[in-house]
Image 1 (cartoon, rainbow, N blue to C red):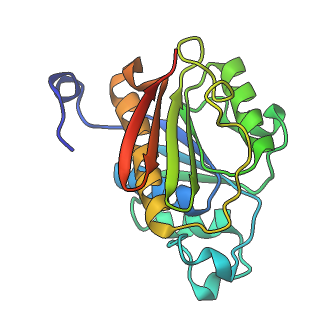
Image 2 (image 1 turned 180 degrees about the vertical axis):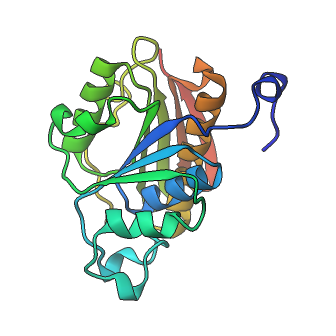
Length: 216
């Protein structure tokens, strides 16, 4: 990563930052690897699901031997090999409402990597109330989106059209990799600089190209 002058002055370190990833699937795997590799100080994982064979095409942190195991706990185990200094916490729970995210109220940023509307709406409500930035992501086949929501600064995910569940019938590993990496890069840049300039920009990946929509 090439750093600008502001980043160089501040130093490339996120050792004192805490990030929560809601969802340990295809997007979550990619986000988690990049954040842990960057040396994030604390990583909180939240997912209630178990590993299935159909997940393995895009959820690369899991293997055939992991089928039936907790995604959250298995991911934590694998990530510990990337950074022994990263503190990893697991919450095996399903998110229905904002109160289900109370464990993340001291996080510096939350990354949403789920495909159901209840969790998306809950995350928006929680982040709006607690004034915590939220990085949203979603994929469907070769299509994907990424969006940074900063409360009191940018339009909400709901106004960006991101709160509806869109469970894909054909998840593609490469798309999960692209959007997951973009979510991680967005979060890291915000954590390093506090720059709101990325907020309110809806990045759309479609047909092997990117478009950015400025939401007012």
